[in-house]
Length: 269
Image (cartoon, rainbow, N blue to C red; front, side, top):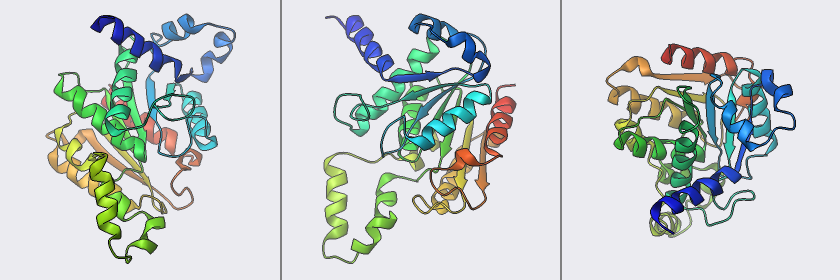
């Protein structure tokens, strides 16, 4: 199998682990259609979101399905991906592997959508996957059309040390060294704080005020780093959502869809 065959096989594998939800206005048209129809639909001019989920469960978790419905009702195609090792996707999850999967999905989508813009949306751990992928694509000369980071951290080291469930162990002898050694061994960093310094794509950060899993301070810090690094400051925006949605439920906020649509329509005008 030559390099071209390997690439085709990889794209095929990733495509099997995608869930494509069309804009709700096309829901009736989509009934009973095959994969070729869905791929062609990406060319219909409706904006596309590639959704990169967090570390728990899979693409069909209830709060993720709720978000997909909100976005579909708002006129977006949504491609939800289970990285390797998640859901029904095979393989072992590694930072390098998850990043490669995200890049493959983005490039697969861009190869089929014509001039329709594509946004990478990462949530929690998925924000690290999103900025890793965006940085690689930027370095290849193909910056992504837009990035949305929902509940982002600065980097996984800081996030892990400050993760609420781990704080009770921080005073145990050797705990921090053991944690850092484990992250270092597996080469896990997900450096959002360094990645955003290299990006030029429109970047929207959204974060809940009462997020106790990834506290708001991390989103604010990341925004500050990105805003300072971007030459075009208008390409970076942060929106803080009021209490009530915590870490996973911004999808229930009545202002979410408007926030996303207003930002993307301005950037893609």
